[in-house]
Image 1 (cartoon, rainbow, N blue to C red):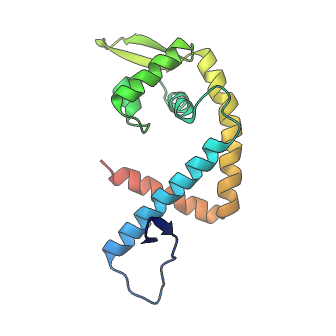
Image 2: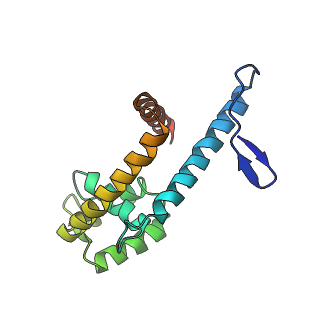
Image 3: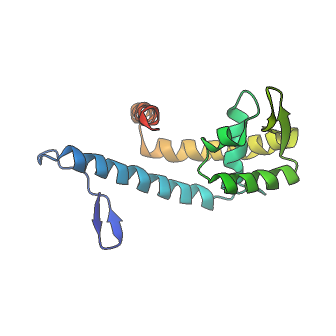
Amino acid sequence: MSVIGSHTSVVPPDAASPRSRSHLANDAWEGLLTAHIRLMRQFAAEDIWGELSMREYDVLHTLSKCPQPQRIGELGTHVVLSQPALSRLVDRLETRGLVERNRDSSDARSIRIGLTEAGARAQRAVGRAHGASVTATLSAALSPEELSTLITLTHKLQEHAL
């Protein structure tokens, strides 16, 4: 990627020109961020979310993947929101009956957040449509082998992140 003015354009690396590890790493980072931004905008614009925002769906989806209700701090490690913003979002979801808060049986000072039946239904309904959209979008751009490589690379990055 190269940045020209305020516009970012994709410039594939030239195999013939040697590039420093720093340039490669920063170009890869910019490419990853740009792809994320564009995909998120595309998915957000779709008419699949019903009465949920993408952020609300993200919280419901995250909770649906957890084997047990989560503390707010644990939930915060999986969603891109500040702790105060996540707390407010959970409050709204609780008011709508999509999540519930319960005392943590192992620590009476802690609260665990879990999906209600209504929250699980809402997550599944939106999740089917969103999953189909993700499948169509990524499968149109990447071969099955490239998708497997992307999974491997993103997991590797996740393992090395703090």
